[in-house]
Image (tube, rainbow, N blue to C red; front, side):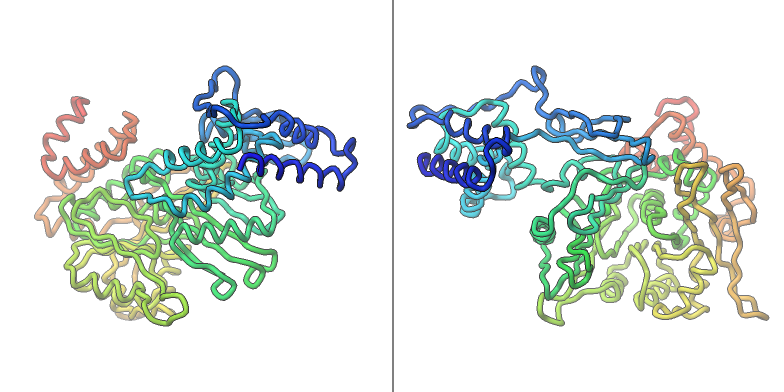
Length: 554
């Protein structure tokens, strides 16, 4: 096997020599030939180095990009891959530059051969759910390497092993992007064009990752397979959920997108956004969030509306932390995004029809109908966009508390969309909806931010005009970047009546919740579990929680 590998390298070098002028081919060809010459004529004892001293000499080195200066640098897969943010003053643009270990021509040849060999070996490997996949890959790579080389230096082995793990176990060329916590979206618009992304600090920015057409086609097919989906020329468009929970949309070939295959990834946050995060970012004020806390606790139904990437689902997920801890919750989504700490929670997702058949599909409508038989106290729907909204509003009308999101840029737009095709909810049923939060993506100076534009309540149908009356409770003021309380809440009045509170008691309850939220903000409490514990502790023993906050012993 070793002699065959050496012979293969010699043939490739000979082909290169025939195709190119050796002097013009330069150092790359020389390096390949030197690598072949350095191979031993026969194998004896094999040595595979396992450890490399990364502190002695870095394995990933950035040598600069002409015309750009470095602005920022940070690790994403330490010590193998890091990011440099570069800026070109002439073009006035940023570049997101991924730096990974550079392979020598000999290392690249060896890596390609290992890729081919491992495909056959790993298919036959019995890998259980508890098996360490990285360990299995490492051991098989070592076994194959022993057939080819007598000894490999630690630096080369570390580089080869990194790329094997990156390509076989993780996300291939986009793995550094998937490991970057500052990235929200990743977008490949076709072959021979840079992959773009949305960065929290630099917004839309191009990367140095470019796919060739054949490579991109293979890559999107592999992405679909890893999501448990089938994509082909006959079925060239899919939506899926990745292993880490991220949402992905994929198109294959030039039938749907004329430039070629594409993919767009909406990255999943492993640690969900909390109410404290939203207050810290000034998406909501503590007063707005205290209002939503009290309304959530007392079974008021809410729709979070807004444009694309305005933060609708993130806000809904955060507000769901205010649901009482033992309540039964059913969530229904196209792709899993919601993450709750509640133990009494059923998470349901829709299912597409089986390939080549018209049966087997389970949509929002069917899941909603089934959910009503599960007697949920809180029903959460990822997005309303069709006939399933009728079932949702029937659930509201029969006493189920429901949360959902929809695309609309104002309260009148929400009402119009709900009443029009294809949703068609009767106006009388819309009265079951209590609150609408309208979110926007806007600018403060030159910084793009997300804000809740207004929180409004739906009250009643005007007997004369037959229009649905709405009342704004909180409105965002762009001049001060603050939130003005502009109306009196009928929802709070109803909560006061049902709970038998006086106006003073209602005010005290709102102040307590606002105090708790501000305490967590001021004391930089950001841990998801600790925030959840404090909120749930308030339901169990509110007096003790307030005492601990006053004494700052939380």
